[in-house]
Length: 520
Ligand SMILES: Nc1nc2c(c(=O)[nH]1)N[C@H]1C(S)=C(S)[C@@H](COP(=O)(O)O)O[C@H]1N2
Ligand SMILES: [Mo]
Image (cartoon, rainbow, N blue to C red; front, side, top):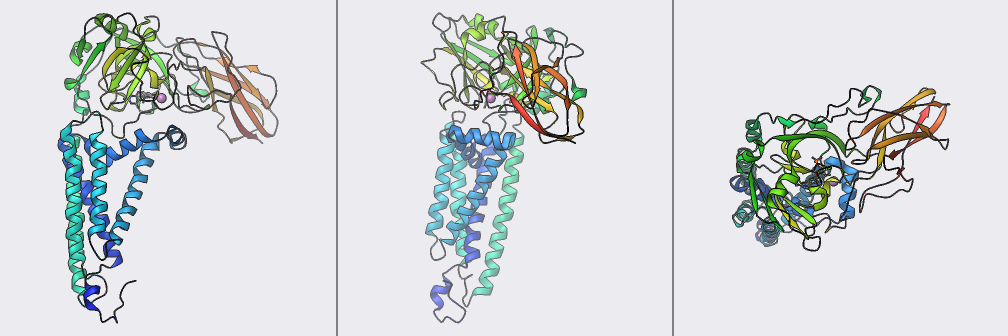
C-alpha cells in the first residue's frame, strides 16, 4: 500500500513511485521503444519495425484453427484485429511492468528489455530481412530501457511524500517530453518508410497492352441489375488474402524472378524483359480455400502477363519434377503441381497486370502467379521472386506445413447474393440471384429450392470461359412466413455439389449455400 501523507517515514515514500506515474513510465517507455524501432526500420525495411515483426511472427505461429477462425470472423480485418489486440496486450503489460517497479526500476527494465529481445528474435527469423535489420529492434530495446530509466528517475517521489508537488511537475515534463519525442520519431519513421513505397514505380509502368487479348466478355455475362456482382471485380473490391501485415514494397526496377532447381539452365528474368514480351490476357476467377460456403473470397479479373509454361520451357524442366515451389519476397511459399503449370490448355500465368492496370501493390506488384482452377494458396503467389522446380518430398509450402492439402483444385460451388440472409420481402414472387463457379470445368446448371421443395432450374448467364464464374437467377412463389432457400450447381463434368457440409480445412468447404428470409 502507498504510504499516506501522515506517514513520518519520508525516505521510503520518496523513493516509491505513485501508481499512475509508475504505470506511465512503462507505457511511455513502450511508446518510445516502438517509435525508435519504427524510425530505424525506416532506414532498412518496414518489416524490421519490431511491432510489425512481432505481428508477422504471431501470424506465422498461429495455429491453423485459430487463423481459420480469425479469417472467418474478422475477414479482411483480421490483421487490424491482430495489431489492435497486440497493442492492448503491450500497453497493459507495460503498465503492469511500470507498476511492478514502484520501489526499484529493475522489474520494468527487465520487462522492457524482454520485449526488445522478442522484437530482435521476430526480426532475426524473418526470411526476407538481412542481418542488418536487427538494428531496428536493437535500437528499440535501447530506447525503451533508457527512457524507462530516465522517466523512473524523474518520477521518484511522485508517491506521497514531502517532495510530492515538485517531483510531480518534473515527472509530467519528462513524460510529456517522452511522448512528444516518440510522436516525432514515429511519424519520421513512417514518412521515411513511405519513401520506399513502390507506388511511384507502379505508376511508371504505364499500360500493359496484351498482344493476345482474352475472349470478349459476353454482354449478358452477369445479372448485376438483379443483384449479382459485376462480371469483372473492380480491383478495389477484389478479395484480398495474404499473411503480410504490411504490403511488400517491391519496385519493378529492383525486381527479378529466378527459376532454378530441376531445370536444364537456371534463369533470371527482370521486369523490363518480361513486359517487353508479347503479353497474353486471360479472364480468371480466383477463389480462396478459406472461403466458407456463401463466403466472399471469390473474384474475377482480366490478368495480363506471360505464359508460365514459356518461362519454364526456357529453363527446361527436367524429368522427375513434380512441384513448382514459389516464394514471395516476404518468404511466403506455395507449391503448384508442375503438370498444371506446364499445361498450356490451362494457361497458368506470371501476371503483371490486372483489369487494365499494373497489379495493385496489395495484389502482388510487380508480379504474381495465377493458375486457373487451383485455390490461391497452391497457385497464386504474390510478389513472387523465386520459382524452384522440385519434388513434393523436397519442399513443403507455407500452408502445407500448417495442415492444408498438397493438391487443391477449386471445388464447384454456388452462392446466393440476393435476397440477403434474414431479409424481409413482400410475399409472392421472390427473385433469387447469385453466382456459381467450377474453374477449369465450367458451370453447367444451377438449381434453387424453397424450403424442402423440389429443385428448380435457374437462368444462367452466358458462359465466358470455363475458368470464370457464371451468374444465375430464378423466381420462386413464396407464401408469407419464414423460409429457406438453397442453391446447388452442377459442372460440365457432371458433378453436382454435395449437401455434405465440410469446413475449409484441409482443401475447401462444401455444402449448399442456404439462407433464411421472411416473406410478408
Ligand atoms: N505472397 C503471398 N502470396 C499469396 C498469399 C500470401 O499470403 N502471400 N496468399 C495466397 C492466397 S491464400 C490467395 S487465396 C491469393 C489471394 O490473392 P488476392 O489477395 O490477390 O485475392 O493469394 C495467394 N498468394
Ligand atoms: Mo487462399
